[in-house]
Length: 117
Image (tube, rainbow, N blue to C red; front, side, top):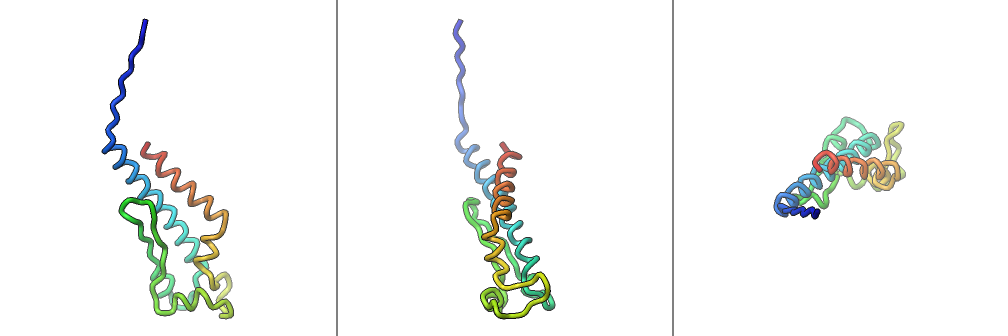
């Protein structure tokens, strides 16, 4: 007794679902990084923190976390500035290089794929 199985793959649907998962996972991961960064950003009245943006490419394979004020780069790079407790320079770089943050970001990406697949 033989068993024959025929599988037809809808490549367009697979590609669309994969792109959707990638966009969602990348956005979730970068949003998490932004949240971690905002907890460290120098804070006076809030414009720098409030200027944080997360952008994800349409295919979901890349994205950015950015701050958009005239002084964002100066505040990020000038380590000699005094800031309130818990606030500091390198407010985006340090979380991006933190292994625990990277691990959480990877888990968020994996979760996005598990939810759709």
